[in-house]
Image 1 (cartoon, rainbow, N blue to C red):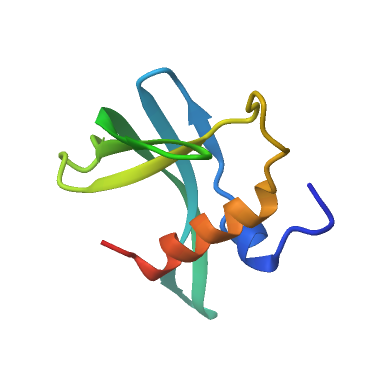
Image 2: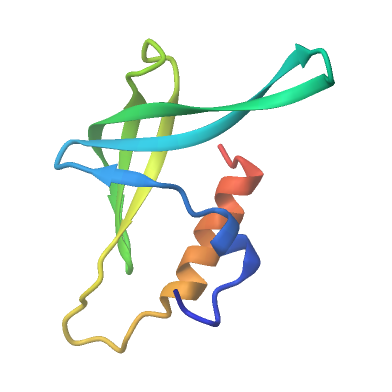
Length: 111
């Protein structure tokens, strides 16, 4: 991990398994349970599976895809930016800056 990564980018990191047509995210969630010693948090793992639906657009840094969450009955949609690592005939990409912009947009839930 780069020393220059912002706290926002580090906090937005999500364990992810990438496959050609789908993405799986793993979350650790806490649920409170009542006990004799008061309330405690129990951690459990939850997965979200997102199926790639169609190509939305392309830009300087990569491609944007529409994805649908299949693990919740298909009610959620999202746009996902796939950032290319290698660009021919261009200067290097400032990945930290690009990731920070994506994290800010994700945090604001821009629609």
